[in-house]
Amino acid sequence: MHFADGAVPEDYLVYVRRKYVWIMGGLLLLFIMLIYSISVGAVTIPPEEVLKTMLGQSVSTKWDSIIWNIRLPQALAAIVAGAGLSVAGVVMQSILRNPLGSPFTLGISNAGAFGAAFSVVILGSGKMQSTVANAVIINNPYLTTMVAFVFCLLATGVILLISRIRGALPEVMVLAGVALSSLFTAGTMFLQYFADDTQLATVVFWTFGDVGRVNWLELEIMTGVVLLAVIFFIANCWNYNAIDAGDETAKSLGVNVEKIRLIGMVIAALVSAVIVAFLGVIGFVGLICPHMVRRVIGDDQRYLIPGSTLLGGILLLVSDTAARLIVSPYVLPVSVLTAFMGAPTFIYLLLRGYRK
Image (cartoon, rainbow, N blue to C red; front, top):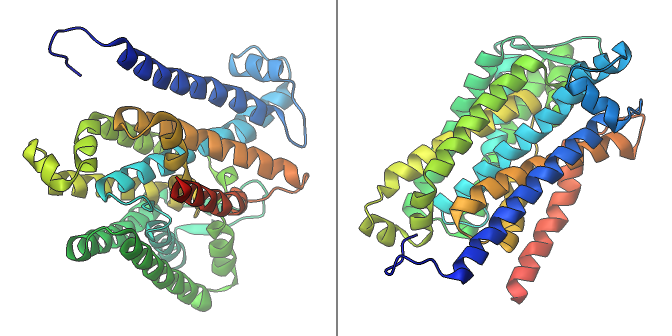
């Protein structure tokens, strides 16, 4: 931001500094939660040993195996998936100018779930195996992700068409999301009905959103897609700020609204497709995180996008850690916990906002 006399007001510096403090505090909390998440479980590992192992200084081969093969990829998958879903949600809310936009509420996650199920059942890209840690294996992650992405794009196209015809009103988007979710859920049920026992077990087990089934290859793919998406969204933060002020205002500032909206929705759909293809459907993270961050950081996309990315990673990591501990030694799928937390939390945010 530029000022006429070249001097930056102190109030503005304090305003910006406060946002940076929140973001840096989020990074510190994320690191602490990462160490804690790796250290707790059926086998408790001291946090200092977790740090030594990650730095290559561990002396216990048993802990090495637990950390590198089970807990670290699971914790990192939670961070990456939470960040991806949250940043997709905040961008959808901005470019559609709709506070209820997210991959879950708009039916995009369910579309990706149907695409992944189609790939597993019809194209044979997934199978069951006897190990508990990885009961479902995606034989061809590229094919599964591509098919999920195609159906996510289909749902995205419908959403963009409806927003063009009727406008991105909250009630219109909610009803469209309900319709799309019902349609693709029915499609998934149709595939399950005609699947054999192994395929049915694969699809049902996979449908539960769970970060514990990811391997290092899938984690690398997820991380690459989410990281590139976050970089792209941050690079376009000024365009999203302009769109927040209205399409006419954005166009008067030289923003190609239709192009920005289309590219943003396509990239958000790709992020959703990759996460759904590898982890299943995880709801509400992309919906509630941006609203929680707005109450602390504000609507400026320069800080809202990185802040939402951080909070999404923290929220899903905390949820996954709690899901592993609540009914230990059994492990709940993280999607169960996010659904229980997400629905009342979002209702609370809505009611609190309306009172204001």
